[in-house]
Length: 251
View: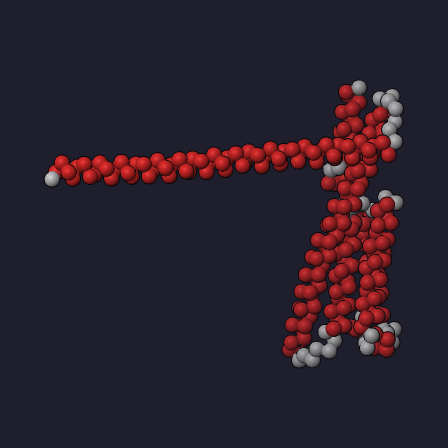
């Protein structure tokens, strides 16, 4: 039975390895193409100010004087990417790391379109056109980093949720293989809540003990300080008396 439990533990440890928690490269690439890259290119061509000279672009005719509509379109693009990524995660076609890529790429795409829209009125000479391009590139990179950070937070939330489900499945599988009554997920949640409550209580008691020990040390330190000050005063008085006696003997 111990050997069987060891095999189960080994399996779940392998499942939590970093390489095992990443989406397959080709699945991830195909997903990002459909969720972020192709929609971004389509939006950039149709509503982006960089292609306003072409007949298929509607920026000048529809959006130039309605910047709010453009913002709404970009928000819709981001929500679409995040929503369908979440759906793919729950149907287990994507793993938790996909949120990092989706958020980063979607925000980079959104920044390219929006930055082009508010920078279109910049009157710059041809010599400084490269500066304008550099600023757009820099803003895209900075916002992309922010998007990645946000995506990492979502990835951690998704990964913790997945780990919780794995723990429940592990308990059920372990009980089944040992011939024990299979616990329900409701029962497992109650057990997990009880363990969490015990942990919080242990942390609270540890904190109270630490505060008590700290107060004791501070009190002892204060008493030692007062005792040292009192001893110093007594020594000073004795030295003063001794000095007077010496002077009297000399005189």
